[in-house]
Structures are given as structure tokens and as C-alpha cells.
Length: 108
Image (cartoon, rainbow, N blue to C red):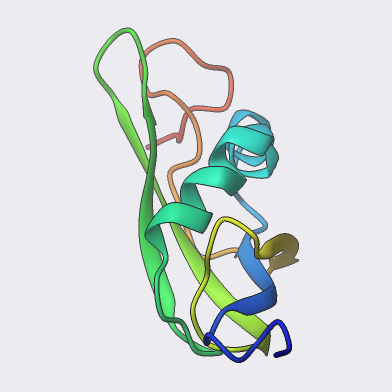
């Protein structure tokens, strides 16, 4: 039996927009968020975009990030054993900073 007989992806490449703030990048690339994706993405296919909740600041602002599945290797189901890698794609106007307390806040 090989690693993909159960439908599990061995590797998935996910992209985030270039205009994601430094805090946002650090959060999505950190091990806890990768583990979260391994538990929540489920069945994926290249080209699909998912909006993922990244966090809530102490002032209550949320950051939702559009993540796009770029490539899937092995099966089509992301599991805790799936390696999650990142790429940066073109900016898409994401509000990438905390609106109340961050230098990365979007400007009107």
C-alpha cells in the first residue's frame, strides 16, 4: 500500500496574496496554522480558493485570508500528515493589517 491509497495528499502548495501584511504572513506560515489546515482543508483541487480565518486582534478586528490551492500531490485530501508549502501570488486588495493598532493598516 502506498501513501496515496487512502486518498491523502502528500504535499499541497497554497498561495496567499502579496499584499498580506507581515503579521499575516508570519501567522499563516507558522506551524500551528499549517497544522490547522491539515485538520480543516479536507478535499482540495488546484485552483480552488478558500477564505481562512487567521485571527482576532485584541480590539476585535478579524483577518480573513483568501488562500488558493496551487498544486496537490498524491491524493486529494489534506490530512495532518500532508506537507503544506506556500507561494506568494499577485496582490488582491486584502486588508492585511489590524485596523486599530497596526502600521500595516489599510488606508482610506
